[in-house]
Length: 383
Image 1 (spheres, rainbow, N blue to C red):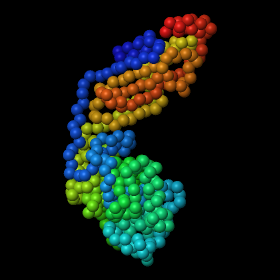
Image 2: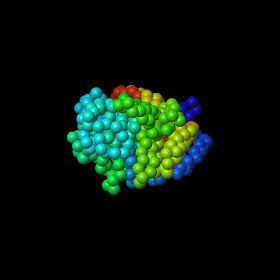
Image 3: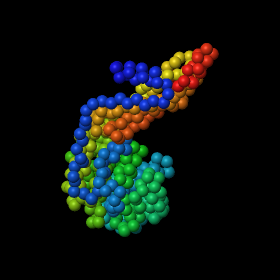
Image 4: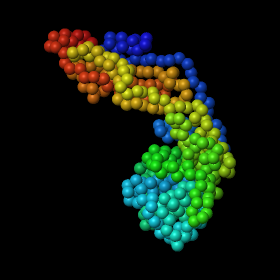
């Protein structure tokens, strides 16, 4: 209450451009991310986009079966636009049948549905399902790959180039841990109704039951996806996502030596993120953050607030140490329109800017009497 009254008093008495700083005492110590034996990784908060930890995040790597995230994303887009449905029957080509590698065991005599092929691709990493979906959506895998690259560019995947829909090694095919994290976040946030496939622990097709290779689905109940990958050149890779309370973390680990290492490495990153970070509403809409002097108005003071909530991923407990800077654009002369920003609030954690939020009038103020306008006009000359 003391600080709030102090802010009101100072803002009322200083009508021209001003900058007020309010700080709290204390320090929050966050240890470095755990050292894990992989070539590259990222740990991202999926709701806010905050990069919590990273290692060689832009390094080009072979995507292995994590490539299938984009094959799935493209399929979800077609489903969302109504161009296909989960119940559509799909013809199986000889190419899809003979592709080799991980398989859901389809052949040209079958007509599985789009929904079955999605499960075959996502849950058991079927290369045959990936090619079948690509051909169903675009006529050929080559044409489908062109679409994959267009979608990657639109998401902002600057270090990615696709050559096939499966992730089988190719010297011209590459991606990065950061790009994979961006794609995973896009799938989770944009297509929650299809994301459920990534938590499915097994899939049975034509009497053959196969199990999801993401071991974290069984080890950690907060983990609900996403995808494993392996080739001899890419090593063992894993995208793992978990939800605890308000936080959605996405860990991408690339180039582990074995399945156990990739699983343990992703788990270590997730636990680190949940242990030391939190999502915090740092700005609240329609809350009074400042008051300011108004000239030539029916009243001589106005309250300022923000228009929307802002949630950030921050170290646990760090919010109490934020420095708040209030900047008022002045002089403020009536009439005052609530749609016009009259200042801004900046929250800082040390030297780091956490957020900048424009401050708007919380009410309109009309012009004052002729006497008030004349009186204030005189005093404004001395400001």
